[in-house]
Image (cartoon, rainbow, N blue to C red; front, side, top):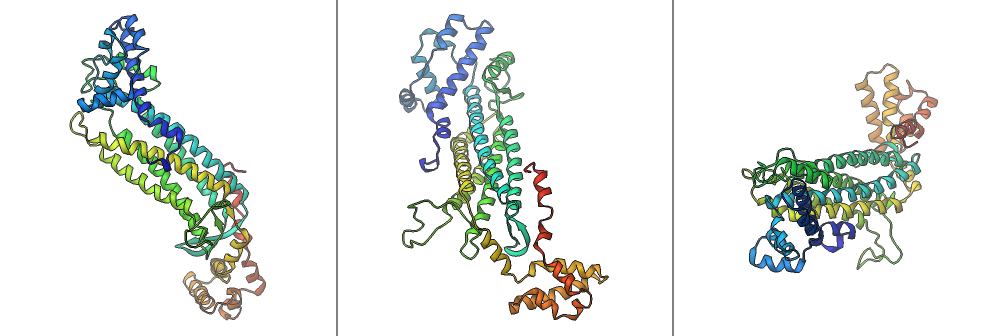
Length: 430
């Protein structure tokens, strides 16, 4: 991921330094486990615990060897003496690489969980703040019936909570190691060593591995990140629509001295929200690539490796950035309740049409007949830009069944918000 969209803590997890450090952590854990089984002398294990590597030297070795893990082992051997012969005993490279990758994925997932918790807290706070802020609900982009801005945000709260559970499940799915030898038979490294290594590292054991940990785990992980990114995309798209000049019910934060356009000084564009939407497209693409990595030849091929070197760091970095950006936007979101009310009135009272329909049905009128009457009056109101209530007064089919006082009672916004508190209680927000 380019530096523009990389936050330091997540970037550190995916640095070469951290990668090599995690490889060494696994190799040391394996030597300790072999030591417990008497295969490596205790004094050798003690020296191996102090082993190190040199990033520049690894790069030099790789120019010749064209194999990054062997180059890493050569650099580690440089820091040791004869005991270096015990490092990587009975292993294939992916015993260390995949297990170390799991360590970094778990660390990345924990950062993402923190970011998600911050975003969720910001949305929860704004949802409660605007629980009773009336606004127009829209379907197909068209005025439907009134809702509240807080209820809209409460739906986001519920969705983010589901994403939190998905992320926890995906983290658990990837939190496994494998130390089972070249094709997973344990011929060169017994199961008890594998179990001891994974316990030392705080990982579960991939019960039946090949030369690699099965890539369905990684696909699930990246797909989960893409799902969360798609939720953020949905929320950002909604706020982008609400910031349009013709709507202007909300605006993303706009700082002192910020520029919206190089040519038009008046512009206050939803560029941060657009950034979230754009990056979500990357995450969905990474998910597809992760799915393609599941089908490897036989006990493994290396076609997945080049893909993962890009998609795993970038997916984690992109979502980490998106979560932080979204939390910032929600904390500073500008909300305009008066404008929301103005927009509600722009439909001449037409959003009350269902109430009139149901009232006519309650008088004994057939639904299809009532629908035609209400729709007929609604089209007159829309075409002539006249108040729906006024148009109804001129229709004898309506007034013969619904007295003026009863009609007046139907045009009440409070009708649409009477269960909002109950919805908030379902989420434990009240």
